Length: 178
Length: 230
Image (cartoon, rainbow over all chains, first blue to last red; front, top):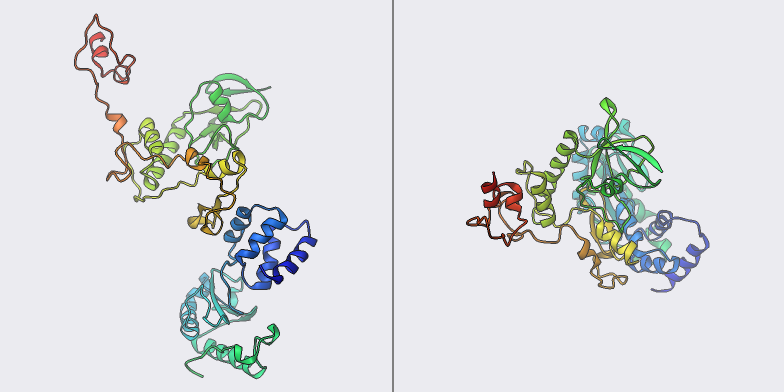
Protein backbone atom coordinates (compact mmCIF):
# COMPACT_ATOMS: atom_id res chain seq x y z
CA UNK A 1 0.00 0.00 0.00
CA UNK A 2 0.93 3.63 -0.28
CA UNK A 3 2.61 5.92 2.16
CA UNK A 4 -0.32 6.45 4.44
CA UNK A 5 -0.05 2.86 5.53
CA UNK A 6 3.59 3.11 6.32
CA UNK A 7 3.24 6.09 8.62
CA UNK A 8 0.24 4.50 10.22
CA UNK A 9 2.15 1.34 10.83
CA UNK A 10 4.98 3.29 12.42
CA UNK A 11 2.48 4.76 14.85
CA UNK A 12 0.82 1.44 15.45
CA UNK A 13 4.10 -0.25 16.17
CA UNK A 14 4.82 2.22 18.93
CA UNK A 15 1.95 1.05 21.11
CA UNK A 16 3.01 -2.48 21.58
CA UNK A 17 0.70 -3.81 24.22
CA UNK A 18 -2.52 -2.80 22.52
CA UNK A 19 -4.92 -5.55 21.59
CA UNK A 20 -6.45 -6.23 18.20
CA UNK A 21 -9.66 -4.46 19.19
CA UNK A 22 -8.02 -1.16 20.11
CA UNK A 23 -5.84 -1.40 17.02
CA UNK A 24 -8.85 -1.83 14.79
CA UNK A 25 -10.69 0.94 16.62
CA UNK A 26 -7.93 3.33 15.69
CA UNK A 27 -7.98 2.29 12.07
CA UNK A 28 -11.76 2.53 11.98
CA UNK A 29 -11.68 6.00 13.47
CA UNK A 30 -9.11 7.20 11.00
CA UNK A 31 -10.51 5.80 7.76
CA UNK A 32 -14.13 5.26 8.77
CA UNK A 33 -13.67 1.65 7.75
CA UNK A 34 -11.07 -1.14 7.81
CA UNK A 35 -9.19 -1.25 4.51
CA UNK A 36 -8.28 -4.80 3.53
CA UNK A 37 -4.72 -3.97 2.52
CA UNK A 38 -4.12 -2.20 5.80
CA UNK A 39 -5.38 -5.18 7.79
CA UNK A 40 -3.05 -7.43 5.83
CA UNK A 41 -0.13 -5.09 6.52
CA UNK A 42 -0.95 -4.93 10.21
CA UNK A 43 -1.13 -8.70 10.43
CA UNK A 44 2.27 -8.99 8.84
CA UNK A 45 3.94 -6.22 10.84
CA UNK A 46 2.49 -7.13 14.21
CA UNK A 47 2.79 -10.84 13.64
CA UNK A 48 -0.88 -11.48 14.36
CA UNK A 49 -2.62 -14.09 12.19
CA UNK A 50 -4.80 -12.30 9.65
CA UNK A 51 -7.61 -14.69 10.50
CA UNK A 52 -7.70 -13.44 14.09
CA UNK A 53 -7.92 -9.85 12.94
CA UNK A 54 -10.64 -10.69 10.44
CA UNK A 55 -12.61 -12.61 13.07
CA UNK A 56 -12.57 -9.65 15.42
CA UNK A 57 -13.34 -7.21 12.60
CA UNK A 58 -16.44 -9.14 11.56
CA UNK A 59 -17.56 -9.91 15.11
CA UNK A 60 -18.11 -6.35 16.31
CA UNK A 61 -20.68 -4.12 14.71
CA UNK A 62 -18.51 -1.10 15.41
CA UNK A 63 -16.14 -2.20 12.67
CA UNK A 64 -16.94 -2.00 9.01
CA UNK A 65 -15.08 -3.55 6.11
CA UNK A 66 -16.67 -1.27 3.56
CA UNK A 67 -16.27 2.53 3.60
CA UNK A 68 -18.71 4.36 5.84
CA UNK A 69 -20.10 7.81 5.14
CA UNK A 70 -18.50 10.94 6.51
CA UNK A 71 -21.58 11.64 8.57
CA UNK A 72 -23.17 8.90 10.56
CA UNK A 73 -26.92 8.89 10.95
CA UNK A 74 -28.04 6.38 13.55
CA UNK A 75 -31.67 5.58 14.10
CA UNK A 76 -32.94 3.63 17.06
CA UNK A 77 -35.49 0.86 16.81
CA UNK A 78 -35.57 -0.17 20.44
CA UNK A 79 -38.87 -0.88 22.14
CA UNK A 80 -39.47 2.67 23.35
CA UNK A 81 -38.48 4.22 20.03
CA UNK A 82 -40.46 1.65 18.09
CA UNK A 83 -43.74 2.26 19.89
CA UNK A 84 -43.30 5.99 19.45
CA UNK A 85 -42.90 5.70 15.70
CA UNK A 86 -39.21 5.32 14.94
CA UNK A 87 -40.15 3.29 11.88
CA UNK A 88 -41.69 6.32 10.16
CA UNK A 89 -38.70 8.48 11.04
CA UNK A 90 -36.31 5.87 9.67
CA UNK A 91 -38.34 5.62 6.50
CA UNK A 92 -38.23 9.38 6.08
CA UNK A 93 -34.45 9.48 6.47
CA UNK A 94 -34.15 6.55 4.11
CA UNK A 95 -36.25 8.34 1.52
CA UNK A 96 -34.43 11.65 1.95
CA UNK A 97 -30.94 10.25 1.71
CA UNK A 98 -31.94 7.66 -0.86
CA UNK A 99 -30.32 4.78 1.00
CA UNK A 100 -31.47 1.80 2.99
CA UNK A 101 -30.35 1.21 6.55
CA UNK A 102 -26.78 -0.11 6.65
CA UNK A 103 -25.78 1.62 3.42
CA UNK A 104 -23.84 4.72 2.46
CA UNK A 105 -24.84 7.44 -0.01
CA UNK A 106 -23.03 7.30 -3.34
CA UNK A 107 -21.11 10.48 -2.63
CA UNK A 108 -19.84 8.93 0.57
CA UNK A 109 -21.26 11.68 2.77
CA UNK A 110 -23.96 9.94 4.77
CA UNK A 111 -24.35 6.46 6.07
CA UNK A 112 -27.50 5.28 7.73
CA UNK A 113 -27.49 2.72 10.48
CA UNK A 114 -30.17 1.17 12.61
CA UNK A 115 -29.41 0.06 16.14
CA UNK A 116 -31.45 -1.77 18.73
CA UNK A 117 -31.10 0.72 21.55
CA UNK A 118 -29.14 3.89 22.15
CA UNK A 119 -29.84 3.94 25.86
CA UNK A 120 -31.83 7.17 25.89
CA UNK A 121 -35.35 5.79 25.79
CA UNK A 122 -36.83 8.88 27.44
CA UNK A 123 -36.01 10.78 24.26
CA UNK A 124 -37.75 8.28 21.99
CA UNK A 125 -37.87 8.18 19.05
CA UNK A 126 -34.22 8.99 18.82
CA UNK A 127 -31.90 9.85 15.93
CA UNK A 128 -28.19 10.48 16.38
CA UNK A 129 -26.37 12.45 13.72
CA UNK A 130 -22.60 12.57 14.15
CA UNK A 131 -22.90 11.92 17.87
CA UNK A 132 -25.53 14.63 18.34
CA UNK A 133 -28.71 13.31 19.93
CA UNK A 134 -32.02 14.42 18.46
CA UNK A 135 -34.90 13.28 20.64
CA UNK A 136 -38.69 13.10 20.13
CA UNK A 137 -38.27 12.90 16.39
CA UNK A 138 -41.04 13.06 13.84
CA UNK A 139 -40.81 12.77 10.06
CA UNK A 140 -41.20 16.53 9.70
CA UNK A 141 -38.63 17.34 12.34
CA UNK A 142 -36.00 15.00 11.01
CA UNK A 143 -36.39 16.43 7.53
CA UNK A 144 -35.78 19.88 8.92
CA UNK A 145 -32.68 18.73 10.75
CA UNK A 146 -31.32 16.88 7.74
CA UNK A 147 -31.92 19.91 5.53
CA UNK A 148 -30.28 22.15 8.09
CA UNK A 149 -27.37 19.73 8.30
CA UNK A 150 -26.65 19.77 4.59
CA UNK A 151 -27.31 23.50 4.33
CA UNK A 152 -24.99 24.19 7.25
CA UNK A 153 -22.25 22.45 5.40
CA UNK A 154 -22.80 24.78 2.46
CA UNK A 155 -22.61 27.88 4.64
CA UNK A 156 -19.42 26.86 6.36
CA UNK A 157 -17.89 25.93 3.08
CA UNK A 158 -17.39 22.42 1.98
CA UNK A 159 -17.47 19.66 4.53
CA UNK A 160 -14.52 18.00 2.86
CA UNK A 161 -12.19 20.97 3.23
CA UNK A 162 -10.28 19.45 6.08
CA UNK A 163 -9.26 16.62 3.82
CA UNK A 164 -7.65 19.10 1.44
CA UNK A 165 -10.12 18.63 -1.36
CA UNK A 166 -11.53 21.39 -3.51
CA UNK A 167 -15.02 22.62 -2.85
CA UNK A 168 -16.34 21.23 -6.10
CA UNK A 169 -15.19 17.76 -5.19
CA UNK A 170 -17.80 17.56 -2.54
CA UNK A 171 -21.26 16.94 -3.88
CA UNK A 172 -24.06 17.71 -1.52
CA UNK A 173 -26.88 15.30 -1.01
CA UNK A 174 -29.76 16.62 -3.03
CA UNK A 175 -32.86 16.80 -0.94
CA UNK A 176 -36.31 16.60 -2.49
CA UNK A 177 -37.88 19.20 -0.22
CA UNK A 178 -35.81 22.22 0.75
CA UNK B 1 -4.48 -38.91 41.53
CA UNK B 2 -8.12 -37.94 41.92
CA UNK B 3 -10.79 -40.37 43.07
CA UNK B 4 -14.25 -40.10 41.63
CA UNK B 5 -17.29 -42.21 40.90
CA UNK B 6 -18.06 -42.94 37.28
CA UNK B 7 -21.38 -44.73 36.70
CA UNK B 8 -21.10 -46.22 40.19
CA UNK B 9 -17.54 -47.38 39.60
CA UNK B 10 -14.80 -46.10 41.89
CA UNK B 11 -12.08 -44.81 39.62
CA UNK B 12 -8.94 -42.75 39.96
CA UNK B 13 -7.51 -40.54 37.28
CA UNK B 14 -4.62 -38.14 37.00
CA UNK B 15 -5.12 -34.48 37.74
CA UNK B 16 -6.09 -32.53 34.64
CA UNK B 17 -7.96 -35.38 33.01
CA UNK B 18 -11.29 -34.39 31.54
CA UNK B 19 -14.40 -36.44 32.27
CA UNK B 20 -14.54 -37.49 28.63
CA UNK B 21 -11.00 -38.83 28.74
CA UNK B 22 -11.70 -40.62 32.02
CA UNK B 23 -14.86 -42.26 30.64
CA UNK B 24 -13.03 -43.29 27.49
CA UNK B 25 -10.18 -44.75 29.51
CA UNK B 26 -12.61 -46.86 31.51
CA UNK B 27 -14.40 -48.03 28.38
CA UNK B 28 -17.56 -45.97 28.64
CA UNK B 29 -18.50 -44.56 25.33
CA UNK B 30 -19.68 -40.98 25.09
CA UNK B 31 -20.73 -39.69 21.67
CA UNK B 32 -19.04 -36.50 20.45
CA UNK B 33 -18.92 -34.46 17.29
CA UNK B 34 -16.48 -31.72 18.17
CA UNK B 35 -13.75 -33.44 20.17
CA UNK B 36 -10.53 -34.98 19.00
CA UNK B 37 -7.69 -36.36 21.04
CA UNK B 38 -5.13 -34.28 19.21
CA UNK B 39 -7.00 -31.01 19.55
CA UNK B 40 -7.93 -28.80 22.45
CA UNK B 41 -11.43 -29.34 23.87
CA UNK B 42 -14.01 -26.89 22.64
CA UNK B 43 -17.41 -27.89 24.04
CA UNK B 44 -19.37 -26.89 20.96
CA UNK B 45 -21.46 -29.93 20.07
CA UNK B 46 -22.77 -30.63 23.60
CA UNK B 47 -23.28 -34.30 22.73
CA UNK B 48 -20.79 -35.37 25.37
CA UNK B 49 -23.08 -34.13 28.15
CA UNK B 50 -22.84 -36.07 31.40
CA UNK B 51 -24.69 -35.67 34.66
CA UNK B 52 -22.58 -34.68 37.65
CA UNK B 53 -23.63 -34.64 41.28
CA UNK B 54 -26.54 -36.50 42.82
CA UNK B 55 -30.20 -35.93 43.57
CA UNK B 56 -31.64 -32.49 43.04
CA UNK B 57 -28.22 -30.93 42.78
CA UNK B 58 -27.18 -32.85 39.70
CA UNK B 59 -26.52 -30.94 36.53
CA UNK B 60 -25.47 -31.51 32.95
CA UNK B 61 -21.98 -30.50 31.90
CA UNK B 62 -19.99 -31.10 28.74
CA UNK B 63 -17.56 -33.84 29.67
CA UNK B 64 -14.92 -32.79 27.12
CA UNK B 65 -14.30 -29.49 28.91
CA UNK B 66 -14.97 -30.53 32.52
CA UNK B 67 -11.86 -31.52 34.44
CA UNK B 68 -12.13 -34.41 36.91
CA UNK B 69 -12.52 -33.34 40.53
CA UNK B 70 -11.95 -35.24 43.74
CA UNK B 71 -15.10 -37.00 44.95
CA UNK B 72 -17.18 -36.14 41.89
CA UNK B 73 -20.11 -38.38 40.97
CA UNK B 74 -20.45 -38.74 37.22
CA UNK B 75 -23.16 -40.58 35.32
CA UNK B 76 -22.79 -40.84 31.59
CA UNK B 77 -26.01 -42.53 30.49
CA UNK B 78 -28.86 -41.40 32.75
CA UNK B 79 -32.34 -40.80 31.38
CA UNK B 80 -31.76 -37.07 31.47
CA UNK B 81 -28.47 -37.30 29.60
CA UNK B 82 -29.82 -39.64 26.95
CA UNK B 83 -32.88 -37.44 26.37
CA UNK B 84 -30.67 -34.37 26.02
CA UNK B 85 -28.41 -36.14 23.55
CA UNK B 86 -31.33 -37.38 21.47
CA UNK B 87 -32.79 -33.90 21.32
CA UNK B 88 -29.44 -32.50 20.25
CA UNK B 89 -29.11 -35.10 17.54
CA UNK B 90 -32.57 -34.22 16.31
CA UNK B 91 -31.43 -30.63 16.02
CA UNK B 92 -28.30 -31.72 14.18
CA UNK B 93 -30.36 -33.83 11.80
CA UNK B 94 -32.59 -30.85 11.15
CA UNK B 95 -29.55 -28.70 10.42
CA UNK B 96 -27.28 -31.00 8.50
CA UNK B 97 -29.04 -34.18 7.29
CA UNK B 98 -26.41 -34.92 4.65
CA UNK B 99 -23.70 -35.94 7.12
CA UNK B 100 -22.98 -39.64 7.52
CA UNK B 101 -21.39 -39.11 10.92
CA UNK B 102 -24.53 -37.50 12.29
CA UNK B 103 -26.83 -40.05 10.66
CA UNK B 104 -24.81 -42.93 12.08
CA UNK B 105 -24.86 -41.41 15.51
CA UNK B 106 -28.61 -40.81 15.31
CA UNK B 107 -29.23 -44.45 14.42
CA UNK B 108 -26.94 -45.60 17.18
CA UNK B 109 -28.77 -43.54 19.77
CA UNK B 110 -32.15 -44.53 18.41
CA UNK B 111 -33.29 -41.18 17.08
CA UNK B 112 -36.08 -42.02 14.65
CA UNK B 113 -37.88 -38.73 14.13
CA UNK B 114 -37.06 -35.10 13.52
CA UNK B 115 -39.55 -32.60 14.89
CA UNK B 116 -37.79 -29.44 13.76
CA UNK B 117 -37.93 -27.40 10.60
CA UNK B 118 -35.67 -28.99 8.05
CA UNK B 119 -32.62 -27.12 6.83
CA UNK B 120 -29.73 -28.18 4.65
CA UNK B 121 -26.59 -26.64 6.08
CA UNK B 122 -23.17 -27.96 5.25
CA UNK B 123 -21.58 -26.96 8.53
CA UNK B 124 -22.44 -27.53 12.19
CA UNK B 125 -19.85 -25.02 13.44
CA UNK B 126 -18.09 -27.63 15.57
CA UNK B 127 -14.81 -25.81 15.00
CA UNK B 128 -12.80 -28.97 14.40
CA UNK B 129 -11.35 -27.68 11.12
CA UNK B 130 -10.44 -24.34 12.69
CA UNK B 131 -8.60 -26.05 15.53
CA UNK B 132 -7.01 -28.57 13.18
CA UNK B 133 -5.67 -25.75 11.03
CA UNK B 134 -4.39 -23.71 13.98
CA UNK B 135 -3.14 -26.39 16.35
CA UNK B 136 -1.93 -29.25 14.20
CA UNK B 137 -1.03 -27.49 10.95
CA UNK B 138 0.02 -24.13 12.46
CA UNK B 139 -1.89 -22.58 9.60
CA UNK B 140 -4.62 -20.30 10.98
CA UNK B 141 -5.92 -20.08 7.44
CA UNK B 142 -9.57 -20.46 8.41
CA UNK B 143 -11.61 -19.29 11.34
CA UNK B 144 -14.97 -18.12 12.59
CA UNK B 145 -16.37 -14.87 11.27
CA UNK B 146 -19.39 -12.81 12.26
CA UNK B 147 -21.58 -13.91 15.13
CA UNK B 148 -24.93 -15.29 16.17
CA UNK B 149 -26.92 -16.83 13.33
CA UNK B 150 -24.53 -15.29 10.81
CA UNK B 151 -21.53 -17.09 12.29
CA UNK B 152 -19.67 -19.22 9.80
CA UNK B 153 -16.24 -20.56 8.97
CA UNK B 154 -14.25 -18.97 6.19
CA UNK B 155 -10.83 -17.65 5.22
CA UNK B 156 -10.02 -13.93 5.67
CA UNK B 157 -12.02 -11.75 3.27
CA UNK B 158 -13.53 -14.95 1.83
CA UNK B 159 -10.49 -15.35 -0.41
CA UNK B 160 -8.00 -18.17 -0.51
CA UNK B 161 -5.70 -17.57 2.43
CA UNK B 162 -1.96 -17.15 1.98
CA UNK B 163 -1.54 -19.28 5.10
CA UNK B 164 -3.34 -22.24 3.51
CA UNK B 165 -1.01 -25.00 2.34
CA UNK B 166 -3.82 -27.15 0.91
CA UNK B 167 -3.03 -29.87 3.44
CA UNK B 168 -6.65 -30.99 3.56
CA UNK B 169 -6.62 -31.40 7.33
CA UNK B 170 -9.84 -29.43 7.64
CA UNK B 171 -11.70 -31.78 5.32
CA UNK B 172 -10.15 -34.84 6.92
CA UNK B 173 -11.50 -33.94 10.35
CA UNK B 174 -14.88 -32.53 9.30
CA UNK B 175 -17.81 -34.55 10.68
CA UNK B 176 -20.26 -32.98 8.25
CA UNK B 177 -18.37 -33.52 4.98
CA UNK B 178 -18.89 -37.23 4.40
CA UNK B 179 -22.14 -37.79 2.52
CA UNK B 180 -24.64 -40.24 3.96
CA UNK B 181 -25.04 -43.72 2.48
CA UNK B 182 -27.91 -42.96 0.10
CA UNK B 183 -26.33 -39.74 -1.10
CA UNK B 184 -26.52 -36.20 0.21
CA UNK B 185 -29.92 -35.19 -1.17
CA UNK B 186 -32.14 -37.93 0.16
CA UNK B 187 -35.68 -36.69 0.78
CA UNK B 188 -36.05 -37.88 4.33
CA UNK B 189 -34.06 -35.98 6.90
CA UNK B 190 -33.22 -39.18 8.69
CA UNK B 191 -31.60 -42.29 7.28
CA UNK B 192 -31.97 -44.95 9.99
CA UNK B 193 -30.95 -47.61 7.48
CA UNK B 194 -28.74 -49.19 10.14
CA UNK B 195 -31.81 -49.74 12.32
CA UNK B 196 -33.57 -51.79 9.65
CA UNK B 197 -30.83 -54.32 9.08
CA UNK B 198 -32.12 -57.54 7.62
CA UNK B 199 -30.08 -60.66 8.11
CA UNK B 200 -27.85 -61.39 5.13
CA UNK B 201 -28.07 -65.20 5.66
CA UNK B 202 -30.57 -67.40 3.83
CA UNK B 203 -30.11 -70.56 5.81
CA UNK B 204 -28.21 -71.77 8.82
CA UNK B 205 -26.14 -74.95 8.74
CA UNK B 206 -25.19 -76.49 12.06
CA UNK B 207 -21.92 -77.91 10.67
CA UNK B 208 -20.70 -75.08 8.47
CA UNK B 209 -19.07 -71.97 9.80
CA UNK B 210 -20.79 -68.77 8.70
CA UNK B 211 -18.48 -66.57 6.67
CA UNK B 212 -20.09 -63.50 8.26
CA UNK B 213 -19.46 -64.61 11.85
CA UNK B 214 -19.53 -62.46 13.95
CA UNK B 215 -22.43 -60.73 12.25
CA UNK B 216 -24.55 -57.78 13.41
CA UNK B 217 -27.78 -59.62 12.58
CA UNK B 218 -26.88 -62.50 14.91
CA UNK B 219 -25.73 -60.09 17.58
CA UNK B 220 -29.10 -58.39 17.37
CA UNK B 221 -30.87 -61.73 17.44
CA UNK B 222 -32.36 -61.54 13.96
CA UNK B 223 -29.86 -63.82 12.17
CA UNK B 224 -30.48 -67.49 11.38
CA UNK B 225 -27.86 -68.64 13.83
CA UNK B 226 -29.35 -66.69 16.68
CA UNK B 227 -32.83 -67.97 15.78
CA UNK B 228 -31.66 -71.58 15.49
CA UNK B 229 -29.98 -71.41 18.86
CA UNK B 230 -32.89 -69.86 20.68
